Amino acid sequence: MNGSAGPLLCLALLACPAAAAQGPIERPPLEAPLPGEPIAAGLAEDTVEVKVNYSGARIVLFATSPFGEDPATGFAVALIGPSAPQTVLRRTAAGRERFEFVAAPTVFAIGAEPQVAETVTPETMILAGLNAAGSAMPEARNLASPDLALWRAAFVELKMDQQLYSLDETTIERLDGGLRRVRINLPANAPTGVYRVRAVAFQNGQRIGETEQTLTLIRGGMDATLFDLSRKHGVIYGFLAVLLGSLVGLIAAWVGRR
Amino acid sequence: MLIHLPIAEIAVDPLIVAAIGTGVGFLSGLFGVGGGFLLTPLLIFYGVPPAVAVSTQANQVLATSIAGASSHWRQGAVDVRLGSLMLAGGLAGSVLGVGIFSLLRYLRVVDATISVLYIVLLGVIGGLMAWESVGALGKTGGDPGRRTRLRGWMRGLPIKRRFPRSGLYISIIPPIGIGFVVGILAAVLGIGGGFILAPAMVYLLGVPTRVMVGTSLFQIIFITGFVTFLQATFNGTVDMVLAFLLMIGGVIGAQGGAAAGRRLKAAQLRLLLALVVLGMAAKLAFDIYVAPRPPFELEALA
Image (cartoon, rainbow over all chains, first blue to last red; front, side, top):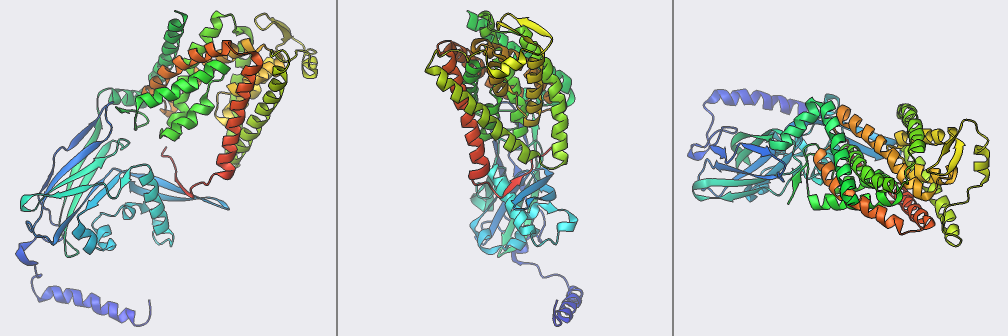
Protein backbone atom coordinates (compact mmCIF):
# COMPACT_ATOMS: atom_id res chain seq x y z
CA MET A 1 0.00 0.00 0.00
CA ASN A 2 1.45 3.41 -0.92
CA GLY A 3 1.46 6.47 1.23
CA SER A 4 -1.67 8.13 -0.06
CA ALA A 5 -3.86 5.05 -0.08
CA GLY A 6 -3.93 4.70 3.72
CA PRO A 7 -5.72 7.98 4.50
CA LEU A 8 -8.11 7.38 1.60
CA LEU A 9 -9.07 3.99 3.01
CA CYS A 10 -9.61 5.53 6.46
CA LEU A 11 -11.87 8.16 4.95
CA ALA A 12 -13.87 5.53 3.12
CA LEU A 13 -14.28 3.48 6.30
CA LEU A 14 -15.41 6.53 8.23
CA ALA A 15 -17.79 7.57 5.47
CA CYS A 16 -19.79 4.33 5.47
CA PRO A 17 -21.25 4.49 9.01
CA ALA A 18 -21.80 8.19 8.48
CA ALA A 19 -23.84 7.48 5.37
CA ALA A 20 -25.83 4.85 7.21
CA ALA A 21 -26.61 7.30 9.97
CA GLN A 22 -27.97 9.85 7.52
CA GLY A 23 -31.20 7.95 6.92
CA PRO A 24 -32.80 4.83 5.43
CA ILE A 25 -31.03 3.07 2.57
CA GLU A 26 -32.14 4.26 -0.82
CA ARG A 27 -34.10 1.39 -2.41
CA PRO A 28 -34.02 0.68 -6.12
CA PRO A 29 -37.19 1.55 -8.02
CA LEU A 30 -40.25 -0.77 -8.28
CA GLU A 31 -39.61 -2.03 -4.70
CA ALA A 32 -37.20 -4.69 -5.79
CA PRO A 33 -35.85 -7.07 -3.17
CA LEU A 34 -32.55 -6.21 -1.47
CA PRO A 35 -29.41 -7.93 -2.75
CA GLY A 36 -29.53 -11.50 -1.56
CA GLU A 37 -33.23 -11.46 -0.72
CA PRO A 38 -35.12 -14.59 -1.76
CA ILE A 39 -37.01 -14.72 -5.02
CA ALA A 40 -39.78 -17.18 -5.86
CA ALA A 41 -38.50 -20.38 -7.48
CA GLY A 42 -39.06 -24.12 -7.50
CA LEU A 43 -37.58 -27.29 -8.94
CA ALA A 44 -39.73 -29.56 -11.10
CA GLU A 45 -38.26 -32.49 -9.15
CA ASP A 46 -36.23 -32.29 -5.98
CA THR A 47 -35.03 -35.91 -5.99
CA VAL A 48 -33.29 -37.85 -8.73
CA GLU A 49 -32.94 -41.60 -8.33
CA VAL A 50 -29.86 -43.29 -9.80
CA LYS A 51 -30.79 -46.75 -11.09
CA VAL A 52 -28.99 -49.11 -13.48
CA ASN A 53 -30.60 -47.37 -16.46
CA TYR A 54 -29.54 -43.88 -15.25
CA SER A 55 -27.57 -42.04 -17.91
CA GLY A 56 -27.75 -38.50 -16.58
CA ALA A 57 -30.73 -36.26 -15.88
CA ARG A 58 -32.12 -32.90 -16.82
CA ILE A 59 -33.01 -30.65 -13.91
CA VAL A 60 -35.71 -28.03 -14.48
CA LEU A 61 -36.01 -24.94 -12.30
CA PHE A 62 -38.69 -22.25 -12.52
CA ALA A 63 -37.85 -18.83 -11.12
CA THR A 64 -39.57 -15.45 -11.31
CA SER A 65 -37.92 -12.12 -11.90
CA PRO A 66 -38.51 -9.46 -9.21
CA PHE A 67 -39.04 -6.95 -12.03
CA GLY A 68 -41.43 -8.92 -14.14
CA GLU A 69 -40.58 -8.70 -17.82
CA ASP A 70 -37.97 -5.97 -17.34
CA PRO A 71 -35.39 -6.60 -20.13
CA ALA A 72 -32.52 -5.26 -18.00
CA THR A 73 -32.96 -8.03 -15.44
CA GLY A 74 -31.08 -11.26 -16.05
CA PHE A 75 -30.59 -14.55 -14.27
CA ALA A 76 -27.57 -16.72 -13.63
CA VAL A 77 -28.22 -20.23 -12.36
CA ALA A 78 -25.75 -22.80 -11.03
CA LEU A 79 -26.04 -26.43 -10.03
CA ILE A 80 -23.46 -27.05 -7.31
CA GLY A 81 -22.64 -30.60 -6.26
CA PRO A 82 -21.58 -31.82 -2.82
CA SER A 83 -18.14 -30.54 -1.79
CA ALA A 84 -15.13 -32.80 -1.42
CA PRO A 85 -11.39 -32.31 -0.97
CA GLN A 86 -9.56 -32.54 -4.32
CA THR A 87 -5.92 -32.42 -5.32
CA VAL A 88 -4.38 -31.16 -8.54
CA LEU A 89 -0.95 -32.44 -9.59
CA ARG A 90 1.47 -30.62 -11.87
CA ARG A 91 4.38 -32.24 -13.66
CA THR A 92 7.55 -30.20 -13.61
CA ALA A 93 11.16 -30.90 -14.49
CA ALA A 94 11.85 -31.36 -10.78
CA GLY A 95 9.01 -33.82 -10.23
CA ARG A 96 5.40 -33.42 -9.21
CA GLU A 97 3.79 -30.50 -7.41
CA ARG A 98 0.55 -30.93 -5.46
CA PHE A 99 -2.07 -28.32 -4.71
CA GLU A 100 -4.91 -29.29 -2.41
CA PHE A 101 -8.37 -27.80 -2.35
CA VAL A 102 -9.91 -28.56 1.03
CA ALA A 103 -13.41 -28.22 -0.43
CA ALA A 104 -14.55 -27.93 -4.03
CA PRO A 105 -17.86 -28.80 -5.66
CA THR A 106 -17.78 -32.25 -7.23
CA VAL A 107 -20.19 -30.99 -9.89
CA PHE A 108 -20.68 -27.45 -11.18
CA ALA A 109 -22.94 -26.39 -14.02
CA ILE A 110 -23.74 -22.77 -14.72
CA GLY A 111 -25.71 -20.77 -17.24
CA ALA A 112 -26.48 -17.08 -17.53
CA GLU A 113 -28.69 -14.83 -19.60
CA PRO A 114 -26.91 -12.42 -21.97
CA GLN A 115 -27.63 -9.42 -19.69
CA VAL A 116 -25.61 -11.06 -16.93
CA ALA A 117 -22.67 -11.93 -19.15
CA GLU A 118 -22.56 -8.34 -20.42
CA THR A 119 -22.91 -6.42 -17.15
CA VAL A 120 -21.80 -8.54 -14.19
CA THR A 121 -18.12 -8.57 -13.24
CA PRO A 122 -16.29 -11.81 -12.37
CA GLU A 123 -15.82 -10.50 -8.82
CA THR A 124 -19.59 -10.10 -8.40
CA MET A 125 -20.10 -13.63 -9.73
CA ILE A 126 -17.61 -14.96 -7.17
CA LEU A 127 -19.40 -13.09 -4.36
CA ALA A 128 -22.70 -14.51 -5.61
CA GLY A 129 -21.27 -18.04 -5.41
CA LEU A 130 -21.59 -18.51 -9.15
CA ASN A 131 -17.97 -18.86 -10.21
CA ALA A 132 -16.63 -22.38 -10.74
CA ALA A 133 -12.99 -21.53 -10.04
CA GLY A 134 -13.86 -19.32 -7.06
CA SER A 135 -15.78 -22.20 -5.47
CA ALA A 136 -12.62 -24.28 -5.05
CA MET A 137 -11.30 -23.42 -1.60
CA PRO A 138 -7.56 -23.90 -1.01
CA GLU A 139 -5.85 -24.55 2.30
CA ALA A 140 -5.58 -21.42 4.48
CA ARG A 141 -1.81 -21.15 3.89
CA ASN A 142 -2.41 -21.04 0.12
CA LEU A 143 -5.10 -18.34 0.12
CA ALA A 144 -2.52 -15.70 -0.78
CA SER A 145 -0.54 -17.93 -3.13
CA PRO A 146 0.35 -16.10 -6.38
CA ASP A 147 -0.37 -19.36 -8.24
CA LEU A 148 -3.88 -19.78 -6.81
CA ALA A 149 -5.62 -18.55 -9.98
CA LEU A 150 -3.49 -20.88 -12.11
CA TRP A 151 -4.30 -23.93 -9.94
CA ARG A 152 -7.99 -23.03 -9.89
CA ALA A 153 -8.10 -22.64 -13.66
CA ALA A 154 -6.34 -25.99 -14.10
CA PHE A 155 -8.80 -27.59 -11.68
CA VAL A 156 -11.81 -26.31 -13.61
CA GLU A 157 -10.30 -27.49 -16.92
CA LEU A 158 -9.71 -30.97 -15.53
CA LYS A 159 -13.25 -31.16 -14.13
CA MET A 160 -14.61 -30.06 -17.50
CA ASP A 161 -12.61 -32.86 -19.13
CA GLN A 162 -14.40 -35.26 -16.78
CA GLN A 163 -17.71 -33.63 -17.83
CA LEU A 164 -18.44 -32.83 -14.19
CA TYR A 165 -18.15 -29.08 -14.74
CA SER A 166 -19.98 -27.30 -17.54
CA LEU A 167 -19.96 -23.58 -18.15
CA ASP A 168 -22.21 -23.28 -21.19
CA GLU A 169 -24.77 -26.08 -21.33
CA THR A 170 -27.38 -24.68 -18.95
CA THR A 171 -30.23 -22.98 -20.82
CA ILE A 172 -32.46 -20.23 -19.44
CA GLU A 173 -35.72 -19.59 -21.24
CA ARG A 174 -37.92 -16.52 -20.71
CA LEU A 175 -41.63 -17.22 -20.26
CA ASP A 176 -44.54 -14.81 -19.73
CA GLY A 177 -44.55 -12.44 -16.73
CA GLY A 178 -40.81 -12.62 -16.05
CA LEU A 179 -40.93 -16.36 -15.35
CA ARG A 180 -37.78 -18.26 -16.29
CA ARG A 181 -37.44 -21.95 -17.10
CA VAL A 182 -33.92 -23.23 -16.50
CA ARG A 183 -32.68 -26.56 -17.81
CA ILE A 184 -29.50 -27.97 -16.29
CA ASN A 185 -27.82 -31.20 -17.33
CA LEU A 186 -26.75 -33.50 -14.52
CA PRO A 187 -23.97 -35.79 -15.84
CA ALA A 188 -24.14 -39.58 -15.60
CA ASN A 189 -20.98 -39.68 -13.49
CA ALA A 190 -22.34 -37.20 -10.90
CA PRO A 191 -21.87 -38.52 -7.37
CA THR A 192 -24.86 -39.01 -5.10
CA GLY A 193 -25.56 -36.44 -2.39
CA VAL A 194 -27.29 -33.14 -1.80
CA TYR A 195 -26.91 -30.57 -4.58
CA ARG A 196 -27.70 -26.86 -4.49
CA VAL A 197 -29.46 -25.13 -7.35
CA ARG A 198 -28.64 -21.47 -6.95
CA ALA A 199 -30.41 -18.80 -9.01
CA VAL A 200 -29.40 -15.15 -8.76
CA ALA A 201 -31.14 -12.21 -10.45
CA PHE A 202 -29.01 -9.27 -11.60
CA GLN A 203 -29.92 -5.81 -12.83
CA ASN A 204 -27.33 -3.47 -14.31
CA GLY A 205 -24.55 -5.58 -12.92
CA GLN A 206 -25.94 -5.61 -9.38
CA ARG A 207 -27.35 -8.59 -7.51
CA ILE A 208 -31.02 -7.92 -6.72
CA GLY A 209 -32.34 -11.26 -5.54
CA GLU A 210 -31.47 -14.89 -5.12
CA THR A 211 -32.85 -18.30 -4.32
CA GLU A 212 -31.37 -21.64 -3.44
CA GLN A 213 -33.12 -24.99 -3.82
CA THR A 214 -31.78 -28.39 -2.80
CA LEU A 215 -31.75 -31.39 -5.07
CA THR A 216 -31.00 -34.88 -3.78
CA LEU A 217 -29.34 -37.50 -5.93
CA ILE A 218 -29.91 -40.93 -4.39
CA ARG A 219 -29.27 -44.49 -5.45
CA GLY A 220 -32.17 -46.81 -6.12
CA GLY A 221 -32.92 -50.37 -7.25
CA MET A 222 -30.07 -52.77 -8.02
CA ASP A 223 -27.59 -49.88 -8.18
CA ALA A 224 -28.24 -49.10 -4.50
CA THR A 225 -28.23 -52.79 -3.49
CA LEU A 226 -24.84 -53.49 -5.07
CA PHE A 227 -23.28 -50.26 -3.83
CA ASP A 228 -24.47 -50.78 -0.25
CA LEU A 229 -23.34 -54.42 -0.33
CA SER A 230 -19.85 -53.45 -1.52
CA ARG A 231 -19.50 -50.77 1.14
CA LYS A 232 -21.15 -52.44 4.13
CA HIS A 233 -20.48 -56.14 3.50
CA GLY A 234 -17.25 -56.21 1.47
CA VAL A 235 -16.51 -59.89 2.22
CA ILE A 236 -19.93 -61.00 0.93
CA TYR A 237 -19.56 -58.74 -2.11
CA GLY A 238 -16.08 -60.15 -2.80
CA PHE A 239 -17.38 -63.71 -2.47
CA LEU A 240 -20.27 -62.93 -4.85
CA ALA A 241 -17.88 -61.35 -7.38
CA VAL A 242 -15.72 -64.51 -7.40
CA LEU A 243 -18.87 -66.66 -7.60
CA LEU A 244 -20.16 -64.60 -10.54
CA GLY A 245 -16.87 -64.96 -12.43
CA SER A 246 -16.74 -68.70 -11.75
CA LEU A 247 -20.36 -69.27 -12.74
CA VAL A 248 -20.12 -67.33 -15.98
CA GLY A 249 -16.89 -69.16 -16.83
CA LEU A 250 -18.39 -72.58 -16.06
CA ILE A 251 -21.58 -71.85 -18.02
CA ALA A 252 -19.48 -70.69 -20.99
CA ALA A 253 -17.38 -73.84 -20.71
CA TRP A 254 -20.52 -75.99 -20.66
CA VAL A 255 -21.99 -74.15 -23.65
CA GLY A 256 -18.66 -74.48 -25.51
CA ARG A 257 -18.61 -78.23 -24.86
CA ARG A 258 -22.06 -78.65 -26.42
CA MET B 1 -28.90 -47.57 -24.45
CA LEU B 2 -26.60 -46.82 -21.55
CA ILE B 3 -26.17 -48.68 -18.27
CA HIS B 4 -25.11 -46.99 -15.04
CA LEU B 5 -22.30 -48.75 -13.19
CA PRO B 6 -22.88 -48.71 -9.42
CA ILE B 7 -19.23 -48.72 -8.33
CA ALA B 8 -17.58 -46.88 -11.24
CA GLU B 9 -20.43 -44.32 -11.11
CA ILE B 10 -20.48 -43.75 -14.87
CA ALA B 11 -22.88 -44.73 -17.66
CA VAL B 12 -21.51 -47.04 -20.36
CA ASP B 13 -22.75 -48.60 -23.59
CA PRO B 14 -23.08 -52.34 -22.81
CA LEU B 15 -22.33 -53.31 -26.42
CA ILE B 16 -19.02 -51.45 -26.43
CA VAL B 17 -18.01 -52.98 -23.09
CA ALA B 18 -18.97 -56.48 -24.30
CA ALA B 19 -16.97 -55.88 -27.51
CA ILE B 20 -13.89 -54.93 -25.46
CA GLY B 21 -14.39 -58.12 -23.43
CA THR B 22 -14.70 -60.23 -26.58
CA GLY B 23 -11.47 -58.90 -28.10
CA VAL B 24 -9.44 -59.41 -24.94
CA GLY B 25 -11.09 -62.80 -24.29
CA PHE B 26 -10.05 -63.95 -27.77
CA LEU B 27 -6.40 -63.16 -27.02
CA SER B 28 -6.75 -64.87 -23.65
CA GLY B 29 -8.03 -68.09 -25.20
CA LEU B 30 -5.46 -67.94 -28.00
CA PHE B 31 -2.29 -67.29 -26.01
CA GLY B 32 -3.09 -68.37 -22.46
CA VAL B 33 -2.56 -64.88 -21.06
CA GLY B 34 -5.11 -63.25 -18.79
CA GLY B 35 -5.30 -60.12 -20.90
CA GLY B 36 -5.31 -57.72 -17.98
CA PHE B 37 -2.39 -55.78 -19.48
CA LEU B 38 -4.68 -54.97 -22.43
CA LEU B 39 -8.03 -54.74 -20.67
CA THR B 40 -7.04 -52.23 -18.00
CA PRO B 41 -5.81 -49.51 -20.41
CA LEU B 42 -8.81 -50.09 -22.69
CA LEU B 43 -11.25 -49.59 -19.81
CA ILE B 44 -9.43 -46.49 -18.60
CA PHE B 45 -9.49 -45.15 -22.15
CA TYR B 46 -13.27 -45.72 -22.21
CA GLY B 47 -13.65 -43.60 -19.06
CA VAL B 48 -13.71 -46.16 -16.26
CA PRO B 49 -11.84 -44.85 -13.18
CA PRO B 50 -8.38 -46.53 -13.02
CA ALA B 51 -8.92 -48.12 -9.59
CA VAL B 52 -12.16 -49.76 -10.78
CA ALA B 53 -10.62 -50.81 -14.11
CA VAL B 54 -7.66 -52.55 -12.44
CA SER B 55 -9.87 -54.45 -9.97
CA THR B 56 -12.73 -55.33 -12.30
CA GLN B 57 -10.51 -56.72 -15.07
CA ALA B 58 -9.36 -59.41 -12.60
CA ASN B 59 -13.00 -60.51 -12.16
CA GLN B 60 -13.49 -60.70 -15.93
CA VAL B 61 -10.22 -62.54 -16.47
CA LEU B 62 -11.38 -65.09 -13.86
CA ALA B 63 -14.40 -65.99 -16.03
CA THR B 64 -12.53 -66.06 -19.34
CA SER B 65 -9.69 -68.11 -17.83
CA ILE B 66 -12.17 -70.73 -16.58
CA ALA B 67 -13.85 -70.83 -20.01
CA GLY B 68 -10.50 -70.97 -21.84
CA ALA B 69 -8.89 -73.47 -19.47
CA SER B 70 -11.90 -75.81 -19.71
CA SER B 71 -11.47 -75.97 -23.45
CA HIS B 72 -7.80 -76.96 -23.03
CA TRP B 73 -8.72 -79.29 -20.15
CA ARG B 74 -10.98 -81.36 -22.40
CA GLN B 75 -8.04 -81.87 -24.75
CA GLY B 76 -5.82 -82.97 -21.85
CA ALA B 77 -3.67 -79.89 -22.29
CA VAL B 78 -3.59 -78.66 -18.67
CA ASP B 79 -0.73 -79.76 -16.44
CA VAL B 80 -2.33 -79.35 -13.01
CA ARG B 81 0.74 -80.58 -11.12
CA LEU B 82 3.06 -78.11 -12.82
CA GLY B 83 0.49 -75.31 -12.57
CA SER B 84 0.02 -75.91 -8.84
CA LEU B 85 3.77 -75.67 -8.18
CA MET B 86 4.02 -72.40 -10.08
CA LEU B 87 0.93 -71.12 -8.28
CA ALA B 88 2.51 -71.85 -4.89
CA GLY B 89 5.65 -70.00 -5.95
CA GLY B 90 3.56 -67.18 -7.36
CA LEU B 91 1.61 -66.61 -4.15
CA ALA B 92 4.83 -66.47 -2.12
CA GLY B 93 6.44 -64.17 -4.67
CA SER B 94 3.49 -61.81 -4.65
CA VAL B 95 3.85 -61.35 -0.87
CA LEU B 96 7.51 -60.33 -1.38
CA GLY B 97 6.47 -58.22 -4.37
CA VAL B 98 4.01 -56.23 -2.24
CA GLY B 99 6.88 -55.52 0.17
CA ILE B 100 9.15 -54.39 -2.68
CA PHE B 101 6.36 -52.19 -4.00
CA SER B 102 6.02 -50.55 -0.58
CA LEU B 103 9.78 -49.96 -0.47
CA LEU B 104 9.79 -48.40 -3.95
CA ARG B 105 6.93 -46.17 -2.92
CA TYR B 106 8.79 -45.15 0.23
CA LEU B 107 11.83 -44.28 -1.91
CA ARG B 108 9.52 -42.35 -4.29
CA VAL B 109 10.80 -44.22 -7.34
CA VAL B 110 7.83 -46.48 -7.92
CA ASP B 111 6.53 -44.82 -11.10
CA ALA B 112 9.93 -44.64 -12.78
CA THR B 113 10.84 -48.20 -11.78
CA ILE B 114 7.56 -49.67 -13.00
CA SER B 115 7.73 -47.85 -16.33
CA VAL B 116 11.29 -48.93 -17.10
CA LEU B 117 10.74 -52.48 -15.82
CA TYR B 118 7.60 -52.88 -17.91
CA ILE B 119 9.24 -51.69 -21.13
CA VAL B 120 12.47 -53.68 -20.65
CA LEU B 121 10.61 -56.84 -19.68
CA LEU B 122 8.09 -56.69 -22.49
CA GLY B 123 10.73 -55.71 -25.03
CA VAL B 124 13.19 -58.47 -24.07
CA ILE B 125 10.58 -61.24 -23.80
CA GLY B 126 8.78 -60.19 -26.98
CA GLY B 127 12.04 -59.77 -28.91
CA LEU B 128 13.45 -63.14 -27.91
CA MET B 129 10.17 -64.90 -28.64
CA ALA B 130 9.85 -63.25 -32.04
CA TRP B 131 13.47 -64.13 -32.90
CA GLU B 132 13.05 -67.77 -31.90
CA SER B 133 9.61 -68.30 -33.44
CA VAL B 134 10.58 -66.73 -36.79
CA GLY B 135 13.51 -69.16 -36.92
CA ALA B 136 11.26 -72.08 -35.95
CA LEU B 137 8.71 -71.19 -38.63
CA GLY B 138 11.34 -71.87 -41.27
CA LYS B 139 12.00 -75.32 -39.82
CA THR B 140 9.38 -77.58 -38.22
CA GLY B 141 7.08 -74.88 -36.92
CA GLY B 142 6.89 -76.78 -33.62
CA ASP B 143 8.22 -76.21 -30.11
CA PRO B 144 11.75 -74.93 -29.42
CA GLY B 145 14.45 -77.57 -28.93
CA ARG B 146 14.41 -79.26 -25.54
CA ARG B 147 18.15 -79.63 -25.02
CA THR B 148 19.39 -76.11 -24.49
CA ARG B 149 22.32 -75.11 -22.24
CA LEU B 150 20.02 -73.52 -19.64
CA ARG B 151 17.85 -76.59 -19.43
CA GLY B 152 20.95 -78.74 -19.12
CA TRP B 153 21.84 -76.78 -15.98
CA MET B 154 18.30 -77.21 -14.67
CA ARG B 155 18.45 -80.97 -15.17
CA GLY B 156 21.13 -81.10 -12.51
CA LEU B 157 18.85 -79.69 -9.81
CA PRO B 158 17.48 -82.01 -7.09
CA ILE B 159 13.88 -83.03 -6.13
CA LYS B 160 12.87 -84.26 -9.56
CA ARG B 161 9.29 -85.18 -10.37
CA ARG B 162 7.47 -86.41 -13.45
CA PHE B 163 4.99 -84.13 -15.20
CA PRO B 164 3.30 -86.52 -17.59
CA ARG B 165 1.02 -83.96 -19.22
CA SER B 166 4.02 -81.90 -20.26
CA GLY B 167 6.21 -84.94 -20.86
CA LEU B 168 8.83 -83.57 -18.46
CA TYR B 169 10.99 -85.07 -15.71
CA ILE B 170 12.46 -82.04 -13.99
CA SER B 171 13.23 -80.62 -10.56
CA ILE B 172 10.34 -78.83 -8.84
CA ILE B 173 12.67 -75.91 -8.04
CA PRO B 174 12.51 -74.18 -11.47
CA PRO B 175 8.66 -74.14 -11.69
CA ILE B 176 8.40 -72.80 -8.14
CA GLY B 177 11.19 -70.33 -8.86
CA ILE B 178 9.55 -69.11 -12.07
CA GLY B 179 6.21 -68.76 -10.26
CA PHE B 180 8.00 -66.87 -7.48
CA VAL B 181 9.67 -64.39 -9.85
CA VAL B 182 6.43 -63.91 -11.80
CA GLY B 183 4.61 -63.37 -8.48
CA ILE B 184 7.06 -60.60 -7.55
CA LEU B 185 6.70 -58.94 -10.93
CA ALA B 186 2.92 -59.35 -10.85
CA ALA B 187 2.71 -57.56 -7.50
CA VAL B 188 5.15 -54.79 -8.46
CA LEU B 189 3.67 -54.20 -11.91
CA GLY B 190 0.03 -54.84 -10.92
CA ILE B 191 -0.58 -57.49 -13.58
CA GLY B 192 -1.55 -61.18 -13.65
CA GLY B 193 1.79 -62.17 -15.11
CA GLY B 194 0.50 -64.50 -17.83
CA PHE B 195 2.50 -62.86 -20.59
CA ILE B 196 5.70 -63.45 -18.59
CA LEU B 197 4.77 -66.90 -17.36
CA ALA B 198 3.75 -68.26 -20.76
CA PRO B 199 7.14 -67.76 -22.50
CA ALA B 200 9.02 -68.76 -19.35
CA MET B 201 7.22 -72.12 -19.38
CA VAL B 202 8.11 -72.76 -23.02
CA TYR B 203 11.70 -71.53 -23.07
CA LEU B 204 12.92 -72.28 -19.54
CA LEU B 205 10.98 -75.40 -18.59
CA GLY B 206 10.43 -76.85 -22.05
CA VAL B 207 6.65 -77.14 -21.68
CA PRO B 208 5.03 -77.79 -25.08
CA THR B 209 3.20 -74.71 -26.38
CA ARG B 210 -0.06 -76.67 -26.52
CA VAL B 211 0.11 -77.51 -22.77
CA MET B 212 1.55 -74.12 -21.84
CA VAL B 213 -1.63 -72.23 -22.80
CA GLY B 214 -3.99 -74.38 -20.69
CA THR B 215 -1.61 -74.58 -17.73
CA SER B 216 -1.05 -70.83 -17.74
CA LEU B 217 -4.81 -70.24 -17.75
CA PHE B 218 -5.22 -72.77 -14.94
CA GLN B 219 -2.88 -70.74 -12.74
CA ILE B 220 -4.47 -67.44 -13.72
CA ILE B 221 -7.87 -68.70 -12.47
CA PHE B 222 -6.60 -68.86 -8.90
CA ILE B 223 -4.59 -65.63 -8.99
CA THR B 224 -7.46 -63.57 -10.42
CA GLY B 225 -9.97 -65.16 -8.03
CA PHE B 226 -7.70 -64.20 -5.12
CA VAL B 227 -7.16 -60.67 -6.43
CA THR B 228 -10.88 -60.14 -7.11
CA PHE B 229 -11.78 -61.16 -3.58
CA LEU B 230 -9.11 -58.94 -2.00
CA GLN B 231 -9.94 -55.90 -4.15
CA ALA B 232 -13.69 -56.25 -3.55
CA THR B 233 -13.30 -56.82 0.17
CA PHE B 234 -10.67 -54.26 1.09
CA ASN B 235 -10.93 -51.60 -1.61
CA GLY B 236 -14.55 -51.92 -2.79
CA THR B 237 -13.42 -51.28 -6.36
CA VAL B 238 -14.83 -54.32 -8.18
CA ASP B 239 -17.86 -53.32 -10.27
CA MET B 240 -19.93 -56.45 -10.76
CA VAL B 241 -22.15 -54.92 -13.44
CA LEU B 242 -19.11 -53.90 -15.48
CA ALA B 243 -17.47 -57.28 -14.85
CA PHE B 244 -20.60 -59.12 -15.98
CA LEU B 245 -20.75 -57.17 -19.25
CA LEU B 246 -17.06 -57.87 -19.88
CA MET B 247 -17.50 -61.54 -19.01
CA ILE B 248 -20.33 -62.03 -21.51
CA GLY B 249 -18.07 -60.84 -24.33
CA GLY B 250 -14.94 -62.36 -22.78
CA VAL B 251 -16.12 -65.96 -22.53
CA ILE B 252 -17.33 -65.91 -26.14
CA GLY B 253 -13.98 -64.47 -27.23
CA ALA B 254 -12.03 -66.99 -25.13
CA GLN B 255 -13.78 -69.93 -26.76
CA GLY B 256 -13.12 -68.43 -30.19
CA GLY B 257 -9.47 -67.81 -29.29
CA ALA B 258 -8.98 -71.39 -28.10
CA ALA B 259 -10.54 -72.70 -31.34
CA ALA B 260 -8.35 -70.40 -33.45
CA GLY B 261 -5.25 -71.51 -31.54
CA ARG B 262 -5.86 -75.11 -32.56
CA ARG B 263 -5.57 -74.13 -36.22
CA LEU B 264 -2.16 -72.52 -35.77
CA LYS B 265 1.29 -74.08 -35.57
CA ALA B 266 3.05 -73.69 -32.21
CA ALA B 267 5.64 -71.32 -33.70
CA GLN B 268 2.93 -69.20 -35.31
CA LEU B 269 1.21 -68.93 -31.94
CA ARG B 270 4.43 -67.86 -30.24
CA LEU B 271 5.17 -65.32 -32.95
CA LEU B 272 1.70 -63.78 -32.59
CA LEU B 273 2.11 -63.56 -28.80
CA ALA B 274 5.56 -62.01 -29.33
CA LEU B 275 4.04 -59.37 -31.61
CA VAL B 276 1.34 -58.54 -29.04
CA VAL B 277 3.97 -58.22 -26.30
CA LEU B 278 6.27 -56.10 -28.49
CA GLY B 279 3.34 -53.91 -29.53
CA MET B 280 2.49 -53.34 -25.89
CA ALA B 281 6.13 -52.42 -25.12
CA ALA B 282 6.22 -49.99 -28.03
CA LYS B 283 2.97 -48.35 -26.95
CA LEU B 284 4.16 -47.94 -23.37
CA ALA B 285 7.48 -46.48 -24.49
CA PHE B 286 5.64 -44.08 -26.80
CA ASP B 287 3.22 -43.01 -24.06
CA ILE B 288 5.99 -42.39 -21.57
CA TYR B 289 8.77 -40.91 -23.68
CA VAL B 290 7.17 -39.49 -26.85
CA ALA B 291 3.46 -38.62 -26.47
CA PRO B 292 2.79 -35.18 -24.96
CA ARG B 293 1.44 -35.44 -21.43
CA PRO B 294 -0.87 -32.87 -19.87
CA PRO B 295 0.93 -30.70 -17.33
CA PHE B 296 -1.90 -30.97 -14.81
CA GLU B 297 -3.91 -33.93 -13.58
CA LEU B 298 -6.47 -34.58 -10.88
CA GLU B 299 -5.49 -36.98 -8.16
CA ALA B 300 -8.04 -39.75 -7.87
CA LEU B 301 -10.18 -39.54 -4.76
CA ALA B 302 -9.55 -42.34 -2.29
